[in-house]
Image (tube, rainbow, N blue to C red):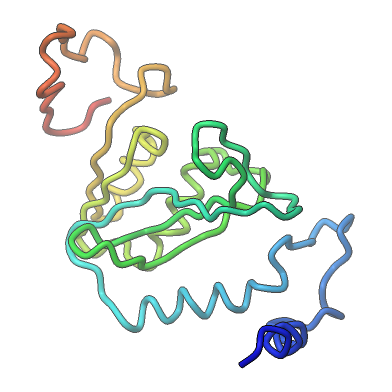
Length: 191
């Protein structure tokens, strides 16, 4: 198919009714209104096609984006400095994406915080099934881990030293800089 024909057909492809979209200044405005049905269908298909194993992980992925977009993210450390951030829940053994959420800018977070809300939304279909969630230090918090433990889901992650509600410094082992092979091994609750 010629490029011009493809571009013409693509311009008529719509995934949502534009007349139902709230205006930008409205409180219910959705920045991804036009592709939300597609994202929801993707997530539904992810759940139908594959059941994740015992170990799952949540992390971010980036999609390079140079066009104008209100919620694009600038990261000078990445090769693609402007991008769309995507939060993904993946199976650890196969790297299959089981659930995803697009970052659409700052929103009002719950009392627990924005990272808690992201994890809670992504893991919700797979909670209370005896799985273990692995996260990096961006998501690690005692409140989140306690919440997951109360729902029969274990969690493992590294801790940032400046994170609120972390274990007291007295409980953290003193590690010399030269001993970087294993930082700490701990069982049980760190509170």
